[in-house]
Each structure stands twice: as structure tokens, then as C-alpha cells.
Image 1 (tube, protein in one colour):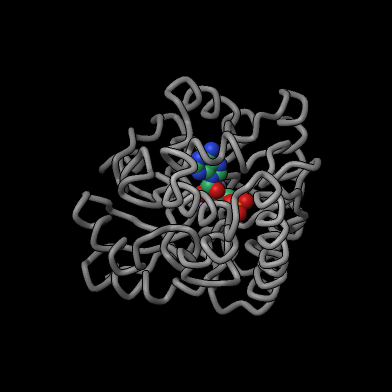
Image 2 (cartoon, protein in one colour):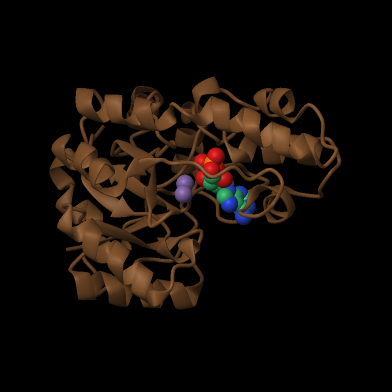
Length: 288
Ligand code: AMP
Ligand code: MN
Ligand code: MN
Ligand code: MN
């Protein structure tokens, strides 16, 4: 039998329903062309693209898992929780995501006010031009506008100079609670996964607390191989997955062909000693 850890699963990416630039259909085609064997679209705080993604994937013969990436505030920091294999019509999940999206417009206006104070005018309207779904206006859309307007060479520079803590366009925001996000996903039949843990820059003590609380709330997985991790971090989070008995996930976090470092399906395999999250979700996969 084939080793399940060798499956080319890509269970994390974004469409223009959130802050990606490609449609769900174009992403399905790209995943398929890149050899992805199990795919999930995980837009931020939104499941509006799920049906389109699933239909496009199945038409190409590509097995599909429902997905989303929920923004969470934990210990005053933003943490992302990916949900996989849930029922996209679940009412409590949909209400929770709608509430999580709710504050984005006001936050965006405050971000624009902060940027105006350092001489960058029209950022709200400028960012809005890049937004497919106005409820999901995000820092990524501001970054694209600031590049277009010539303030920075690329979106990574925009984040560094303007959109992270203590910079003029940064506005602290309260997202969903960790336990709520995990429960919305789990109660809808899915598995909750800590997204790209190395990105949070927690101290080891804070990170340990995140994992302990996540598991206590019913969280079951962690991204080990992601476009956001280095090779050393794959190994470090493989160890943590084993220590906490977590299922391991794999996903590129692809947003855009030019901005994203890692293309759909272009990741190393999961370390073989881990249990892949798709093994626990076999019954939840939509198959052609
Ligand atoms: P938001 O949900 O509005 O706070 O925006 C977060 C999004 O910004 C993430 O999902 C990434 O797509 C993007 N992002 C965060 N940090 C960076 C960075 N350093 N460089 C480029 N994109 C980033
Ligand atoms: Mn994003
Ligand atoms: Mn994320
Ligand atoms: Mn993401």
C-alpha cells in the first residue's frame, strides 16, 4: 500500500474570496496542473468559495476537503486556525465566521487614517480596488495598493515598514477566541489545525500554552510542512506534533503567483513518522 504521508496534499491556500488573487476555479486548475492529489481552499474567515472550489476540483478529478482559516486572538497575538472537512452549511460555524469578519471595515478605515498621518493618502479606497469581498478587506489588500502607488517595492516590504505592530498602518484587532474557533470547526464535523505555528514568534512558554489550550478545546492538528516554515521548522514542529499527539497537515498558503514563495503542491513530503491529518479525514473527502 502507498505510504499516506507521500500524498501530495495541499490543504491551505487563498482565493479572491479573501486575500488571494485567483478565483476558486483558477486555483483548482493550478492545483491539478501542479500534481496536487488532495486539495482544500482555506479562505480567511469565509466559506463563500467552498462550493465553487469543490465543484471545480471534482470536475478535474481532484479530491477535495472543505476548508477555512479562522483569525483568532490568543494571548494578545493573532493566531490562525485552519478548519478542514467540516460541513460548510453549518449555521453556528457560518455565524461565527460572520462575526469574526465583522470588524474589518472599521479596522481598515483606521489603518488608512494611520497611513494618512505619514503622508499616504487614499489608502482605504486604494485597498478596496483589490478587494473581491468587501467584508474581507485585509492588510494584504493595503499592501498591494502601497506597492502600486510606489511606496514599496513589494508586499513584504510594505508589511515590514507599515503593517506590523508599532508601524503607522497597524491597528490592533480582536478576532475570535481560540476555544470558539476550535468548537465551530469541530462541531461542524471538521478537524481544527494550528496554522503555520512558527510565524507567531511566541516564546517557548507561550507556544506551549497555545498548544495545551488548543488541545484542551478539542484541536487535533498542526501544520508541519507549510510555505511559512523553514526546513528546520518542519523538524521542530514534527517533534511538537508527536509530543502533543497531533495530526500533521501540509499546505502552501498560496495567495498569488508573484507574491507567494511556495506554489500549490510544491512542498516537501510530510515526515513519515507523523500521522497525516487526511488519514483522520478520509470519510470527509469529496471524491470525483
Ligand atoms: P489580516 O487578516 O488583514 O491581518 O491580514 C493577514 C494576511 O496578511 C495574512 O493572511 C497574509 O496573507 C498577509 N501577511 C501577513 N504578514 C505578511 C508579510 N510579512 N508579508 C506578506 N504578507 C503577509
Ligand atoms: Mn492571507
Ligand atoms: Mn495565516
Ligand atoms: Mn493562509
